[in-house]
Image 1 (tube, one colour):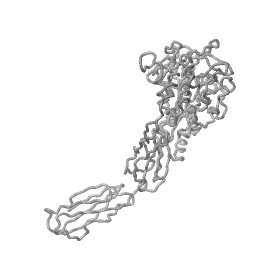
Image 2 (cartoon, rainbow, N blue to C red):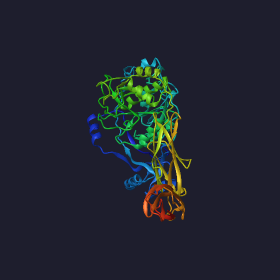
Image 3 (cartoon, one colour):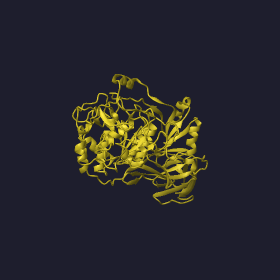
Image 4 (spheres, rainbow, N blue to C red):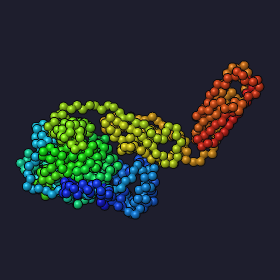
Length: 585
């Protein structure tokens, strides 16, 4: 996100815990916090720039940054105007959503420099998995955190260029110390005779800084980091952060990444509560709980039905900022351990889809606690050897199935005016990467985030009939198009009635001797004919939608003499006209 100030939502660094009882109380009672002078707004594709700009200006707001791939704007606004603006933005037809910029407090656990055993690696059977694969330089792990120490001897040789979303530059050095610990846990250099070993020590690390110098992470930066990693082909993103406020911004970024085959791993939290923690509780995120050296739930680890898997998180010896090493605890380290396992899975079988990687993780754990899935360990504690073995033989099916797509609204044949909300339903067996909307056969706008919704200013086209069609794409390049919908734009006041162009039989005709007379009629209009009505001798005989009508008039019982055939035409504005033909029987 391009911004010159501290960006958006701050989230808690899940490093560990100090006082369990105090943290649990705070987690249950503390109100949600947010940045007082900011909002996040997602603009619908196709929304007129001038109307979006005017909507912000009318509320005294300005755009401080954006995530273009998600059409999300970071809005700066005086704090006393924020709530009024939020309500108005929520009702604006050009916006998908608006949300506050939530903040969560950091929780820190002290380091223990005397602890020098990496017990967690044999516990998850990493050495057995390394007999097959130790990682791959082509399988990168993005560490979205406080930065990574670029000079650390166990990390320096494996960092690839990343980005600093806090300062908007390329300096990704660690400003707090948390990111270096997380990075080493995931992928510190192995077999080099010094220090420690990461789970996927053959994989590269992309450092993405998303925090300030106090360790607070911001949801806007996290979302931007997720999108950045996905756009750069990184399959694995680790976020050892969390907050108790849900976020459509984060969900949009995770969905975007998932559609590109990128998986987000996130910490479950350290408050020993079942409260949903984000981004871990987001759809498509892998939520990782913590275990101790005895394969018990770590005392601090959050839990719940939203947990995916568990991994060691107590006394994890890893790299520290400044070139040293430290022992740390928290779900902050369970998450990168699991991300490292995923990197090994992709290293042995890089063509696996995101869903296949997650399925292999879940199906090849060591089941702890209650048999089967449970709220403390999810599907179980990760097992490298099992996961790598399963990945090695996993088949990668060819995806030839196109998405399904349809226009939900407006309906076919609708009359529209002004700003038109166009909603598209699109699904796919692996995921929809984008939806294109075509107006009169030309590309109008594209949307890469679900729900797929567009804003069309119909005043930019002439009144009359126009066509809409949506096309959906998946990651394999399969595509499908919706049915073509026709809508009638009616922005100007229409006072012109329809013109009845034909009535048959014509005026003065004789129908003597016929048992059945076929009456046909048609009409035109400057916009559209909505319906026609047929009367015989003043009695309504037929009503049809559209501009043409055909009716069989049974002559049995019809008196000899003159009879009137009257047609009434209606247009979409309610204007009417009529014409009469008199025939002889």
